[in-house]
Amino acid sequence: MRPGEISQGTDRLILAPAERRETILQLMRSAGRALLLSMFRCDDFTIIDEVAAAVKRGVDVRVLITQRARGWRDRLKDLTALLKSIGADVRPYENPVMKYHAKYIVADDGPALVTSPNFTRKCFESTCDFMVLSDDPDVVSGLKTLFETDCCTPVGQLPDVTGRLIIGPEHSRRRLSEMLSGASGSVRIIDHRLTDPRMLALLMQKQREDIPVQVVGNGPISGLISHGRMILIDEKTAIIGSIHLSPPSLDSRREVAIVIEDPSLVAELYDYFENLAAETKMCLWAAPTVAPEDEDDEDDE
Image (cartoon, rainbow, N blue to C red; front, side, top):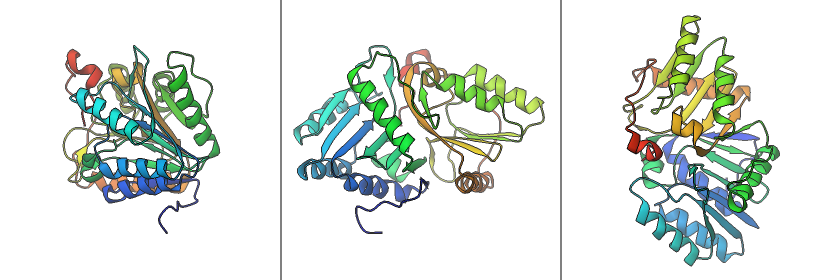
């Protein structure tokens, strides 16, 4: 595949750390008219350089960025100033109540990328994380609608978008509860912040119904730092994105996840999970409670 090209499948999974940076760079290079970046953290200068290159070739680059990330108060100000200095239209998320934690990219009219990793050296090299590249027009238009809403009316009502996107906090608790409640065969989860009491009770109820529940939580995962979030249900459905099964993430943050039902991709994710099972301790567990003062900034990776 030549630089700037993107595979044409409806969805594509990116699981290996070595593929993450180049996938993002290729997506950014493919933009000819418009590039939307929803950003929580970024300290990788190849991404910044690609923003500059896109601006230079006439692409309308817009960045929606959080104003709150633990340990990043000054770095976010510097990042915002740097992106503006190279010609990007940067909008800090201005909802006074809701923290911004969504991570996605849209190039032109697609493809779009929904991610759990940040655009950081750490997440490009040493974390267990997941990315989905999608050509689905409904996913692309849904993310565009969300971006415009969060830029222009961040305290307004969220417009309807495709059911393939789970957008928090409006959708996340209800939809994830419904999907997990409907599980009849198995539930497999990777999430190091699974602390929500109602979600834990739901999963324990599934266990009492003799439905296998496996959770990978704290600690290294196949030699990588636990950071990504993935839910697998009944070998039919996968959910990947920025949403943790924790109270702050479910109830008070802008989050985005994508639902995958393509049988080949779900099978690939199940195989990935099973490979982890061979070398990672798995159990249904209640993680240590996050200290109240840390709840708003619990995602510090």
